[in-house]
Image (tube, rainbow, N blue to C red; front, side, top):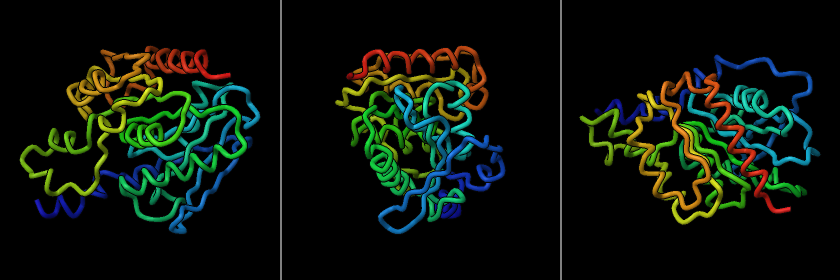
Length: 252
């Protein structure tokens, strides 16, 4: 139990796995860099022109995703949008050590940097643990829309699912209370879940449905799991439908 408490950061933030799956970026990709208030360097990537009249997409991947994979995947779905993603703190080449608190703070730093001089509001997209980060951004900054993919109500509740034998309430050092972040927020929000998800079971996503005040799309891909969801045609369709809804209701 003590070992699990000490190793929870490594168990939660799969830094090595993310680093081992770095894809090649096209020559058109632009490297981005932001310095966090504590001096750590945060490195990201942009695909697509920033002058694009459509809403930029800011993606936050799962705990085994890197920014390059996230940006490439979103750009494959939305080739006519500007897509931006950053490597989480502690995920090379970004510096520092990962933690839920740090990821939340870094996301606001990144958002503020990207918003400078922009006329089109950003759409925040979060996959799995990234849904917590994206929700934090939508809670504290004006976004055009929020897409939550395989989200959980809280990291504490999810930890109880997987470690029911441990006093997770006492041991957990990383907190992402997604349900509290989305409450009373009028941001148009889409939620997409996987029906066969064993990593984020349906009962951990379900409480969000009644908590989100402006749920404009709620889709469960019944025959998909947590990790094979992204290539499912129904998932691709739901993602595109969500962005289309946000674009149609965006202030002009």
